[in-house]
Length: 209
Ligand SMILES: CC(=O)SCCNC(=O)CCNC(=O)[C@H](O)C(C)(C)COP(=O)(O)OP(=O)(O)OC[C@H]1O[C@@H](n2cnc3c(N)ncnc32)[C@H](O)[C@@H]1OP(=O)(O)O
Image 1 (cartoon, rainbow, N blue to C red):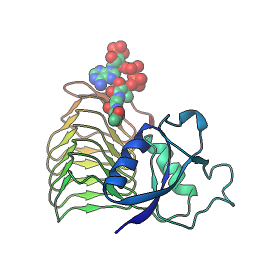
Image 2 (image 1 turned 180 degrees about the vertical axis):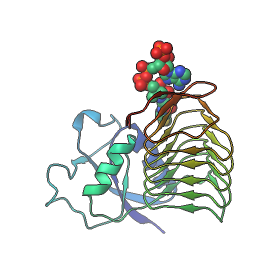
Image 3 (image 1 turned 30 degrees about the vertical axis):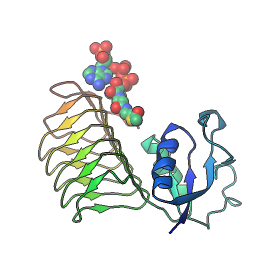
């Protein structure tokens, strides 16, 4: 059966989400974007977003996925939209029956989510990411392609784990952190930190997302 969905955001990340939805037999009825300069060349019939016309924007209607890669922007948009939200989960993702996934979250091709893991709202579990057992991933986080989170890892609200990063068991990453590409995280990370390298070291402590 076909379901209807709307996509908020028309850049490259939106293209991936659209494909996941269409494979799953969704009809994308509308695509919105606030920034014409960020629209991907393959996005068609993009309508203006809610930022400039919050009162006339069609908040009611099919559920929405906020298809914006920058975590802080997804959080900002979720704050001013008054919509219901859908999930987009690629058919090749392997997801334990005992894990939970919040509304608005997307899980891309080849991602693995193991038992007793909780994934928040509007999260991105990107291509081939591995999120192991008993993880807690906060709202608006992004686990990039090929990142590997071992068991009992926590990732706070809005944090971005970069491509190919590795987080060893039981590490807690705070909120609104950035973990650089290829970083090996061996210790807990305080809120708002940027961590890079092997072993991971803090290079910044202000909000980056
Ligand atoms: C489908 C998709 O595309 S999903 C997108 C996924 N995106 C990512 O994974 C990107 C992750 N981003 C990064 O790794 C970035 O380099 C960041 C965010 C960590 C840092 O970016 P910036 O704040 O611009 O820092 P900048 O480039 O100035 O680097 C600062 C220092 O950290 C070093 N550094 C930056 N990133 C890394 C890294 N990943 N590993 C090791 N060192 C790094 C730089 O060499 C530089 O060192 P120096 O001061 O000795 O010269």
